[in-house]
Length: 367
Image: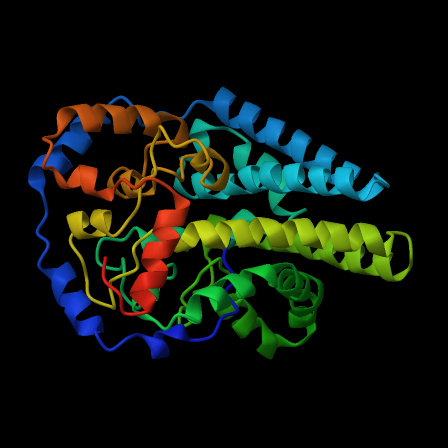
């Protein structure tokens, strides 16, 4: 869940960007891998509503329950432990926004509405901020280009761009409060403000040059009710805190938990791709190799890359496969393709090595 309020980091790309573009352009599609992926996934595209609802409801109950304990407990140690549990559980609950973007809503009836009421509106990240945006990241000719809302050539930038990237995420709760509690209501009475609100502050993106188009039809209806509900919640939260009804401590803990959630997601975003393309269109295989899987036996990715995000590269091959089937798809593909298949080259051991690799790249050090 990345902030759309960002500096134009593209201006600090390293001087070897042309070499990276050329390398990406030389990667041809591996037809054997693509055929195998299509073949093994034929029976894996159906979403299972019971899994979606059970997983989401469990995450919500644990998350909000732990948040309540973090607010009410007087022991600092226990309160911090409760806040830690709340962050992980609400991070998992929030990650389902990615599934909403890809799913056929008729396959899990009422899920989008339920998720928004339980997670999207309270955490100020309604699903319209991802729907209609994330699908552009998967567009064959957009991935890795200036038209991709979720891509920056981070590996080709200066070392200080990475901590700045994370710092922006830490400030996300403040930005969200301003966007929904101030800008959205003001845009109703100041028409000139509506255009920048829609274009620049209505998407979970990392590419600051991206400008969103207004939604139409059913998507516009979804946008309006979600934005209205989130604005009412944000205004009420601010107003009740100012009035002293909501204790300032509770308000700050709530924002702190949201900030921690967005920071974890931003760190995960840092290792979701290799970020080595600087604007050129890429083949499907090149896009796959620029993406990352962190499969078992590693256990921690289940926490920092939940809801199927540990199979991010595989997801780029099979974007319509629901999260609960990605593990099966990975095992099938691993067994089916040859040892020298590009499929194996997108698998990594864990977070530390990936972060180190990215940091070394920003310093001009090669793997």
